[in-house]
Amino acid sequence: MPFKEKISLFEKRLAEELKSSVEFIEAIAEDLVSAGGKRLRPKLAFLAADLVGANNEVAVNVAVAVELLHSASLLHDDLIDDADTRRGREAAFRRYGNIVSVMSGDFMLAKVLGILAQTNNAKFTLLMSKTASQICEGEVLQFQAASLESYSFDIYYQIIEGKTAALFVAAIKGVGILANLEAEQQKALEDYAWAYGRAFQMRDDYLDLLGNAEVLGKPVGGDLKEGKATYAVLKLFERNIYEAKEIVKRHASKDNDINRMIELIREYKADDSARAQIDYEVKKAIKAVSIFPDSVAKSELIKLANNELKRIS
Picture (cartoon, rainbow, N blue to C red):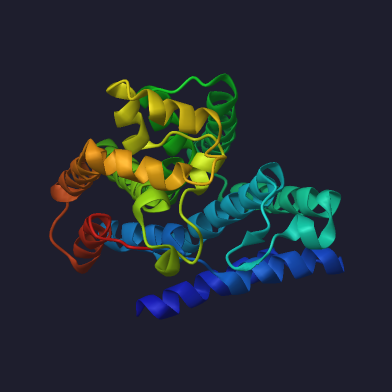
């Protein structure tokens, strides 16, 4: 089955899960479905299924459960971050209010529980439970680090694994669990997802400071304004660049702070260090799937990982 048809199966099932007799919930759900996004997690689920010979039903169940969990977290995150937009549209809580936005997120979490009940697989349920916990811990840790000014590479990795990589793991390993793969193959899928997820978030963080604002569709430096220290900035901290620490501490509140941070990153070659670390994670991801026979799915997974070396948006 062509990939477009597989994604159509996913989109149809997602829309069915999000149906509600309550107009505001339905409207928020329709926005999420139509906005789409990169649909990386569903893509990973389908590629994992193709890689190991699992059927489309397995991939759809995993993809929809993971995407519902992700969407619920986005609704909650936008409220916490006081965001104005989500994927180019007005954030749900701006349009409908805090209560509607939070409860719509909870509605999606309830739908996840329904899918878990239907799959009737304790290991998959435990995986999704762990993923939900990791998302929450990652978001709170990010806030905690900025509030307490407790920055380190260990904390940074915990944050990006909780925010992003954990969902990639759920999408891929979930398929492995429901397909009853052997432990070695499940471990390979999980290792790929952790490494690719870290590379993906690190590339996002890199672009937030060093990307092209027009291509990104948003101003650069958003992380600095929230008091976040991402990989390149942490490399400056490692070298005890006092000015960089002060910029993060004041949330880049001065007019030239973002430009100055970019200058410092380039001056001390922290951008090279960030790209080298992304390359390291990409190589780990590719190595992880080397145990599987060559196939179109394997090539696509490798291509996805390699894309993080050059992605511009």
